[in-house]
Length: 231
Image 1 (cartoon, one colour):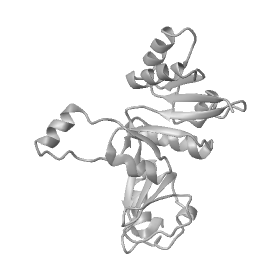
Image 2 (cartoon, helix red, strand yellow; image 1 turned 90 degrees about the vertical axis):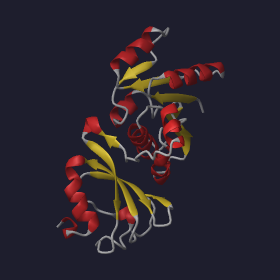
Image 3 (tube, helix red, strand yellow; image 1 turned 120 degrees about the vertical axis):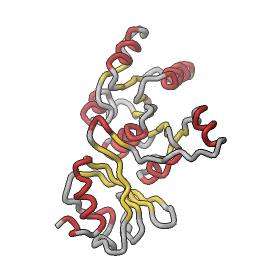
């Protein structure tokens, strides 16, 4: 079947990828980005519009740009400098639109388990910056932060399950959460990742990976940590 390629993120790397694709006669390619200036600039330099302005984590927008075309099979490539945007857009492409070919840049290698936990395995690590190499050589340990979606008031959270949690023994795939959230999966005490669709019990010391609004922090604490368990 014919392939169409959707590239999330306009930058030097994605532009270079576009040129490589054209060299291999893959010309059914579009860009999406939330930056109006980047979209307008790319379209100005192109013979015809190839970039679309919109929210890359909106299913409606992804459908509009052709992620589920009947005459073609989409390949989704996320290349933004935000791992949170990359992860969530890939998750939507893989789960909602059931794409089998989903590829992502990972800006920080510490976030690779997050992508793997949700079944995003076609990953490309972005090279370390010069400043990071210098700091590591000097013996400075950089802090690791889970991904924030600051403009949206939403974050990717990790919650460790303590011994007193009332959800221990519950099936991960059937877990009912009393607030709006997306469970990405879990990482067990041995470091093994599992998708949220797998029929596996939640155990003590599991780390649950979840996307939810920042205002739900207290609700997450009560539900997952066993403090009132959301009641």
